[in-house]
Image 1 (cartoon, rainbow, N blue to C red):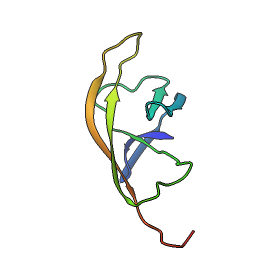
Image 2: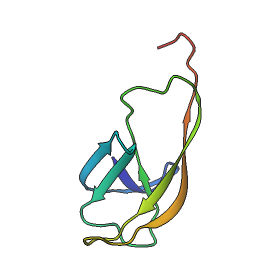
Image 3: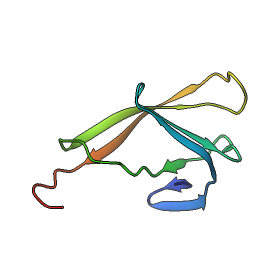
Length: 90
């Protein structure tokens, strides 16, 4: 799922055209329909198949691409995902 804003100020829900995961490159691709106009903050919710074996802060790169074939990407920075050790609890 995706929406405008952040977790503290949720805005409009965004429509996703498609989402894919490439296990070879460890890449998640999210395509919005319609495209999100520049200047907006977008939050994307991810549902893991399973958590990593170890808790910690996992960092990943975020790149945005404008609509169109072979459009140049713009690296937006690093995203962070915190995974907490649950011990023996499930």
